[in-house]
Image (cartoon, rainbow, N blue to C red; front, side):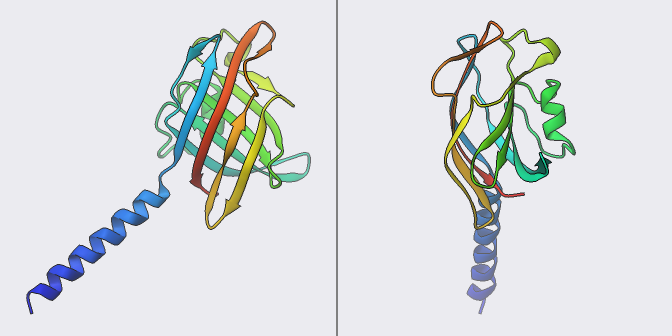
Length: 157
């Protein structure tokens, strides 16, 4: 009879750990500013709107976003360290990207891009968002060079 409570607690702990693991984000790949690499450790997804259409706002950052009520806004002002804020339509088309990197001396702290970042393998299903985001190699804007080649997965908004 004593085995049953132990087994129940063990199964409950396993289910709790699995649920926590599913909520975590994964991001890997290249993020460079003027040839200096930065490590983005997490990504989160949020609902937004652009040009009258719904978008998913992806916030990649080097600092913890936990508890941040406005990670997309705070990322643009360097509060989340090196960061990338990307707005994506439901079909995976990138509307815009804002790049924040410690090695870029950008006016206002970030570089806004349009038409540079591309998304492939974009999926939003089963409560998750995933894809591959790229600048297709190094890209230069206003004398500032950056490169993005990231694969990610996170909880859907």
